[in-house]
Image (tube, rainbow, N blue to C red; front, side):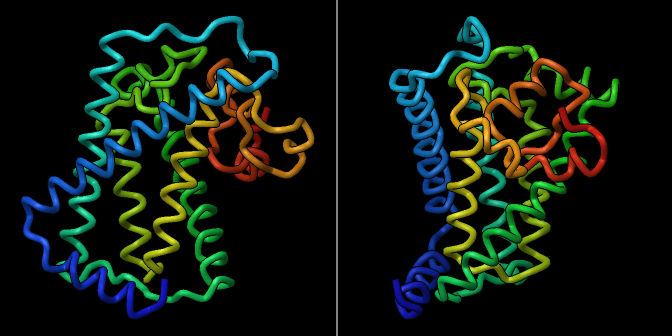
Length: 238
């Protein structure tokens, strides 16, 4: 995709009406939701590694409805991003150089991982945990909906952190798209009930499936998402 193509796409999206943006946002987030569920089921049925816990968390209607509401909240975050873009608060870069995109994606991942560490740590304070985050931790084991079983304020809070980063730096459209896809894949893999990564990956500071599963077993440890860097640095690594 060359710069002219990216510019043309941005111009096309700029001209979308709000009803079109609402429809597009819902379609994109429903597609990502279904992709995550499909990826989870595919790995669960094809991976031969031993389960981390004996049984997956049972799938309930209440979790299903809450997961759909998470999709709606993600759509609202996207619409908030569009509003900020249209009003000049967010500027989208058009850099297509591969090396620079890699740098941007890596920076985005590390910065979001740091913000999410503190956000996640704060969510485990007694009052906030009881009010917001406890529902997610009912999934001591996990299933294909666990990633989406979140209080709406958690989903919106995550989205707001991402929008703040986008307001602070002109990330390219491609970098943002790659980050969002990696975020979904990482979240899906992190909530598997089978270790997806080789054990040696723990030494690479990567937030593996086992790393996040330990957090569901011991809620005082492993608050990071993409990496274990901040947990090691702040003494919460297990």
